[in-house]
Structures are given as structure tokens and as C-alpha cells.
Length: 235
Image (tube, one colour):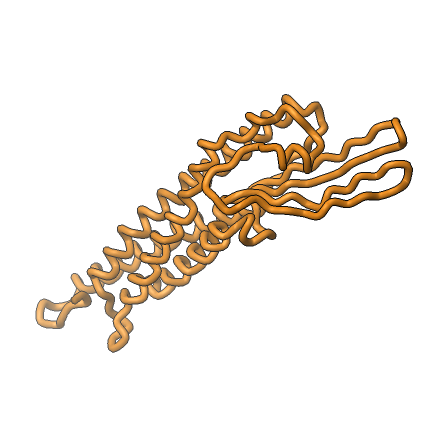
């Protein structure tokens, strides 16, 4: 029964979007991308390494390890405050032991990441309305208002989530392009799991829309086949 699996797809999408919306610096294991640096110098046989992970609301630096003449010195990890929009500031530069990358991350573009919680909220509303599609007393019938309300909200959430996925791809790709051009292999960027979680949410939302539409069309065809006095499938 297709309408019955619509809430499942919406729940999967909501859970993924919720986790991404609570990414770094809230949930430290979920991030959009990571910058890593490992520099060394022949003078005093010294080397330094560090990593910075970026999420929706900020960033976290890894413990900074500096080795001089075989002696290691490690600085504790730290995270930025939770706020909308961030850039490549002095804390990030110090963690990566680089300078001159202040324009690598656009504060304006990072502020667009606020669309993640907006899509999450819309998906939650669609999830709640989808729970009323199937009638408890008659599992073979559906609630027409609930089905169409779910379809409208889920469609809006799917469009926004698709845009978010494209924004995430563009955001990370722009940072990677600037890093490759300006760092001369000093910095290395790797994609985070949050980008692919948004992709999973996008697929789940469109799957929910397809199952909802198929359920509406299927019940409508079944209702048209019944005699006029046989009752309806909608209320």
C-alpha cells in the first residue's frame, strides 16, 4: 500500500536533515568538509599538523601537534561559537599553520546554510500530516485532505532540499577551488558526510512524493470503478 510507506520516506528525510541541521559544532561527527594541513621544516627538524572541520553553524579544530627536535607539543581542540555564517578567521589559520586565506570561505555563502533547518521543519510538518493519510478504521481508504496537504508540503520541502544539496556542492567546490589555487598543496580538502546525508534526504523526499501521488491516483481509479452507490474512498 503506497500511502502507508510515505511516512517512512518522510521520516528518513526528516532524520537526515535534523542530523545535518545539528552538525558541527553541535554534533562533531557530522560536517560538510574538512581542511587538513601537515607542514614541516628542516630547521630544528620541526613539523606541525592540524585539521579543521566545518559544519552548518561553525567549525571545530582538531588538537594541533607541533614537533620540534623530536619533542611533541599538542594544543587542545576547540570549536567556534554556534552562529550563522562564518569565514576563514585567525583561529582556523592558526590551527592549519597558514596565512593569507581570509577570503577562502564566503560568510554570505555560508549564511545560506540556514536553509537546512528550514527544510527540516517543512519535512517534519509533512511527516505529521502523512500520518493521517490512511484511515485507521478502513486501511483501504485514504484521507484526501491529508494526502494533498502532505503532497504540497513535501513538494516544497523536496525543492528546497534539492536546492540545499546544490548549494552544499557549490559551497564546498568553491572552497576547494580556492584552496587548490592558493595553498600550493599545503592544505587538503575532503568532503564531509553531511553533503551525502542531504543527498539521501533529497532522494527520500522525492520518493515520498512519488508514493503519495501513486497512492492518490490508485485510490481514485479504484473509486471510479465502483458503482455510484458503493461509497467513496475519500472523506
